[in-house]
Image (cartoon, rainbow, N blue to C red; front, top):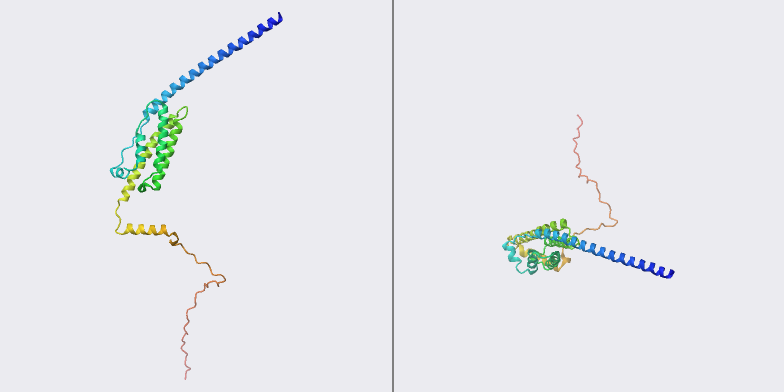
Length: 235
């Protein structure tokens, strides 16, 4: 009889534990579903905000710049990627940000000689940093719109500034030089690059050891004898 009571008690405990486990699992599943729906609603709201502000309004370059960059395919691909707006979910915008990183990297490694200047490389480095920041903030589980939206405007401004820099470089390159000046400068630069040891260096004459110190006395002028009129004795 006691054994029967123990078995009955054990069965009751097992049944209670199973019921508690099932109820806990159901509660966890309900909570998971609720959190998923909440995240989807939040992402839908974020997607609407990002989609309505995803605009890179970069005007076309000047005609002279357009002629100079017509063979710069990497820049053209970057601008095309910038102008194409993603559609669908946040995943599409995240993929777009990653594509922009790749395109900026290609531009940085293929700068034409005319535009391969420190000011251009510096602006491209800033643009690269901002595109990477855009990717960082848009790939977070909860997208930070307060970070993403300003970066869209900043990337637009940096791209416009780059095109203005191109235009300035083209303008300066077209300034006429005096006859023979360009050839002379090119020949001088070529000679310096070929023979850097021929570049004049400032020379410093070492002091001579044991040399007597320089005299600081002002040399006496040659004295002229003073003529005195001797008085003749009176007669």
